[in-house]
Image 1 (cartoon, one colour):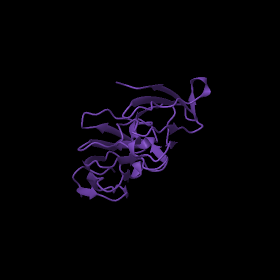
Image 2: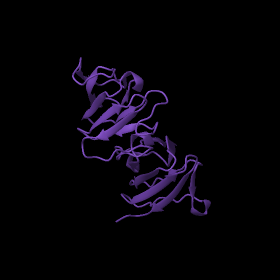
Image 3: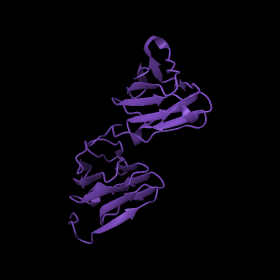
Length: 218
């Protein structure tokens, strides 16, 4: 028998980096002020009909929600990402998997799609981008000590991603992984003018990324 809403229900504030949602939880208040908060839903068969609500109370970092093991959310094993203040979503079990819907009026995004990540300002020469945290990101090169080598993690087949590159006073370039392919086989050099903005679009097929660039946006 599924749990009834309100039966031994509770509201729980989570600040830890990881938390497995309890069957008696009703409302999870996710405080991501200090770190990414990664939530895992309980096993679907243990909570048929149960609705869990997740609300972001601090969006300094992202909040992610994943299914247990090989179970799915809306038919996908990809994480659901919430990274705006007061973003609220509800997750319901059908006894085998979970479905979710957005109560904040935002589009529910899966398979690598979500809202924009926070701006990255690398101070060294490397930057790792995790697409589970959002499908677009701004990279400000003003503090980089040299050309910045990128690592791209968690790209999903069929997903598109955007990088907004902002040049610094000392020109730096972006060095792309071998999996990023460009027209003609050569990666572009980003615009060298201070504060210049280039927009890079990447399409992922699950193995490679196919890149295009629009330069010196004014």
